[in-house]
Length: 323
Image (cartoon, rainbow, N blue to C red):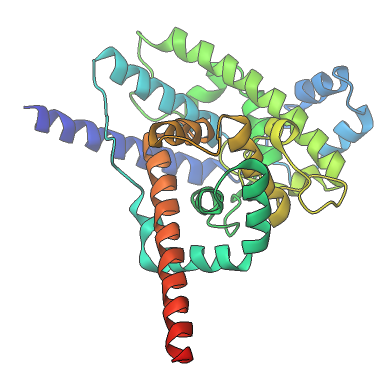
């Protein structure tokens, strides 16, 4: 019976995702109606941002309202709440994202480690975070910088900040996500996430000003995380490091991003001597997913083994040539 219920639930979730993708494919390309950004523009102006600069930003023809981030977030929250209410818990303490442990991916990650060995050595000495762990985080977050997001962080965060009313989100939600018992909760979470996105939007504007880049050109994740290390903009100011001494923190450069990963983990509890449980706990501050932490630590272990094998091979080769 449990198996049937699980199958039904999986089918419903798959259907929901397909419906969501369909709606997004129809709606993602449409700009927001004229005047819809005005409230956000005024709010930023009241919070000290230059009024003309904000007006110019929000009048850009390429600025798009993206309903998917808030829709996805509310869907996730409501599905999770439903599972908790029904007593369902999904616990798998050993699951990993297998694609990151494929031989070709691991070879690429090890080549990256070799290429940046000197930089990673400095990071390891400064923060006590092993180079393999730093590379593992960069691999899982952005495929070592190859995928820093297909959206623009400004569009994402501005769209979420504008979606403070559940009624703005309702037309985009998959069937069955909202019902009588969870509408008040969904309404509250919508306001909370809009407030969160607005705060992150302000930090994104500060980041773009500090780096001298157009805020509408900064790529980001579905929730506005940026850079090779996928920090939310506020975390740039908490944990970001100018690793190359350029005078500013640019998380799209390798030295700054890798230093920032090391600093983040160190500031969140990573020390030179830790148990496996403690390491897992620190990695989960980066992403609360158990599978994420398992994957990062498994990749790090694999990289460490590859390094040992390479060292043994080099030692054997040198020893053989000497005889």
